Structure formats: C-alpha cells, structure tokens
Image 1 (cartoon, rainbow, N blue to C red):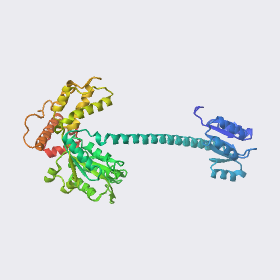
Image 2: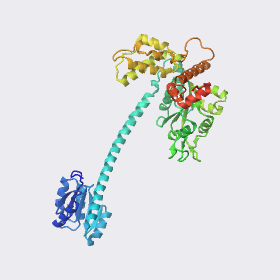
Image 3: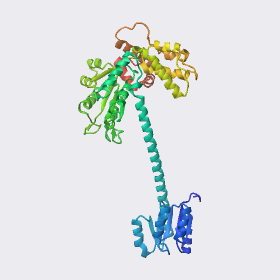
Image 4: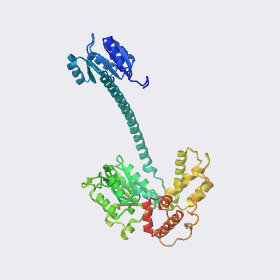
Length: 483
C-alpha cells in the first residue's frame, strides 16, 4: 500500500510513550497524526480530514468522550474508538449507546487486536463515504430523470396533440372528426386500415388527448410473439410459471391500469388468446400465467388490424363475440392513394423532420419531384412515403431542394429482384380490392422466399415482418415454401 493510499487517523493520549507505542503499531497501515491532549487534537482536525480517531478516556482537562463530542462538530463522519481502563467500561458502553463511539478498546491491548479494530473503523468510514456519494449521485440522477421525464411527457403530449395529425383531405377530415368525438370517452375503439396508414399514431392521439393521458399508454403487436410469450407480456406471470420465469412479472394490462392498452394486429391472435382477451373486455379481469387469482384492471382498449375482421368472423377465423366487443367504435383509416391531396403536406413534414434530425438545410421539394410523389401508388402508405423522403434527404446536397433524381429509382419503382418476376402494379386488376391485395401480397412473399432460398428469418426481415407474422401470412395465403 502506498503512503498516499493509507487512511488518515488521529491518536490522542496524554502520555508520550503510549503515543509512541500506538504509532509504531499502526504506522504500517495508516497515516498517523498524534496529539498529547484534546485541544491539540481539535487543531489537527481543523486542518486534516481523518477516517478514524483513537483517544484515551482518561486525560486531564478533557476526557475522551468530551473530546469526541467536540470532534463531532468538526468531522462528524470520522469513526471514533475509545481506549478505556477497567474502571471506565461503563462510560464506554454508555458512549457506544449514545452513538459517540464506534468501538472501545480495553487496556492493556494486543497490537494485532488494535490493528484489526482500526482497520474496521477505516473501512466503515470508507463505506459510509461511498454510500453517501452514491446517494448524492442517485439523488442528482433522480432529479435529472424527473426533469427529463417531465420534458419528454410534454414533448409526447405536444407530438400527439390533435392538431399534429396531418391531413386536410375529406377522407382524413372525416377520421379526425370521429376521433374528436371518441377522445373524451372510455369507449373501446377498433382502428382498421392497411399497413402504414397511421393506426398507432391515431391510437396515441386518442390516449394523449383524453382523460387517461396521465397514465401509461402500452402497446403490443399481437403478431410479433407466440401465444405463451404474448400471454406473459399482456397478463404477466408468476415465478415458475414456465422454464425461464425466474421472478414474478407484471403484464401490460396491470402496468397500464388506469391507462390505455393498444393491441396492434389483433386479427392475428389465436382462438385461445382471443378467449383470454374477451375475458378482459367482459369482466375487466386478468389472470397472470401460473396464478389462480384474478386481478381487476381498468384499461381502455384500442385495437387495430390491417385485416377485414368482419370477413374473418364470417370465415370462422375470428371470434364473433370478441369482434363485437372490439368493434364498439370502428374507425377506418384511408390508404394514401385515396387521399393524394395530403401527400404534399406529409412529404414536406417528413423533409423538415429528417432535415432537422440530420442537421441538414433542405430547400423543400422541387415541383418535378412533388409530381412524382403525388402520382405514385403507395402499397406501404404513409410509412412508405416517409421512407422515400428520408432516403431523399440523405441523398440531397445541403442547401439544395429535393430533386427528382434524389428520389431513388428503386424506391419509386415496383419491387423486383434478379431471378424473379417483378410484382405487377400496372394494368387493370381483376377481382375485388381484397382479392387483388392478397394476390400481390402472396406474389411478394413468394419472390422474397425465392431470393432468400426459403430462409424464413431473412425473408421476414426483408418484408418487415416477424417470423411468426410471416408464417401466419404463409398459412393464410397458401404459399408453398421451396427449400
């Protein structure tokens, strides 16, 4: 141990030979300061910060306990050890009970015992100081987090304030009017629409502008997890409920008690999960996995699906009783091709968003580029438009506007891969919109599987789906997997 790393201690005794003996015993482990009386000891404490003080009880003018009382005002954190004779043990015990001393040492002492006691005193001092430091850091961190959470909450509420929902087309104005009517209520809402039309954005706008805005908004994509994991995420589980359940876990319904739970892609849930969700809607109760007890919860449920749930009911793929529980207030979000007048508003919004995020100054969108954007069909709807604009902002030169050439050809053309027929988006489609969409979806999945040589994980990643979600689409559309 280096000299600098040694803890500092103060020894106070009115006999020089005792001081010398104590010094010889402790100098190897500590940086030692010596004082022949209490007044000299207090002077040292005014100049040196020490970890521990060792003082004799019997000293003229000022006893050891009296010295410790004065020392506490100068260095309250210093650990105090009292040297006592047999006659002073009662005083020492009382001093311990009153919190004035950490330990007392009987005369005559053993050098090794003294060393151990003082080492423990110094370690106690170090641990207390470290705990105090950690508590201060924790308090500062908590204050920062509280402030940051307050700012983030304000930003979230501002971001999802209803005026921020972008759309001036008749189709979107109708949606906005419906949402304004449903916001003040606790009515269950079913949002329907194609992928990328902004169902989660509307769900958040309902929550953050409604009476439950101070409580949690919890979201779960029902197609992203197998049944057991989805049940655990939604309802929680008890320790030991399954192999990896090493502790109790609260589910989203319990965490969002008093708030809102948004169930995305609810049309992809299994019949067993549909039965469990029906119980929540009917009874307001959940039962964690592995538990025999039910828990009352008060949540608003907003669900969403890109499937026609009513058609799924008719085909026997979705429970009719659950559908009517979810479909209390249905809102259908229009695809972007049915609200083309909103494309310039959305495109300019995304340019500002990504220009700010990338620290670029972009001079808007050229007329030629805007014409291309407005004329394009968007199978991926608003999400696809946003991706196109993000790429265009990356490609654009600082200070310039988005030009037609900044819109990547592959972003604006039908998706195609080498070795496979491209997905056709031209010509006159045959059949209903639903049949045409299903055929295109099936063709795209087949092409992706061909490209990845049947690798489900790679195909799901390219398509922006989970493995489970892709498997469900493969089963529903009757896709044959070639390996």
